[in-house]
Image (cartoon, rainbow, N blue to C red):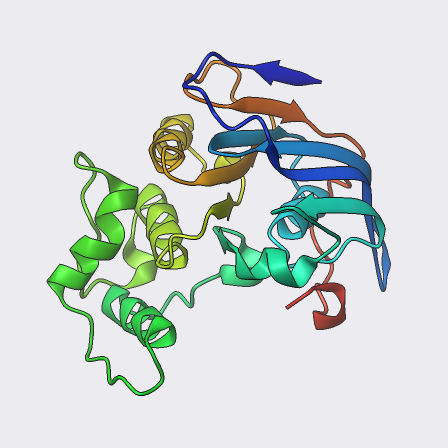
Length: 244
């Protein structure tokens, strides 16, 4: 079931289209069959129960997990997870991008800046202007950036979530896949996070998830219900079960 919203005109050619997608890991069934379509631009919210099935679907849609069943067409190519991986970014999914808590914001930024720099360029430790450049597009003008010298574990949950998204989005990939907004404990924070994703969706295609589908939130391209998701947490996520 798809709920359409009145938004600005977006490209009608879908960026992602999955038919009968499913994943069976080395230790059992994770999700499927699932059909999902993600248009270009804006935000698509997948409505489905939380847990390993939904997480695995999000990983599939950004090329971090290869489906074992069905077909996935992305960026004009079918069943090319490597190409999808190279054209997408993923954030706020603990199984893959969890940040060590006893580390400073500055160190996380420095590591990412060095990772994305050419091999021959020495990158100094991140400074306030790096924090502003990387985080401001995600946080917007109204939300306070995390202090450069603070520990990640000290950050409020919304700040921590937005910081993880900002760090993952350094390359401004065309596709940004974000873990469920309902992973935040406060409804107010979930709404603010979704507001910021809608802002990013003006220049990128953003995919996230919510158990209720965020039906009252304006500015979304679509809310798409997905079924056949296992709702238990991951027992383990082996490297062989991912496309990384």
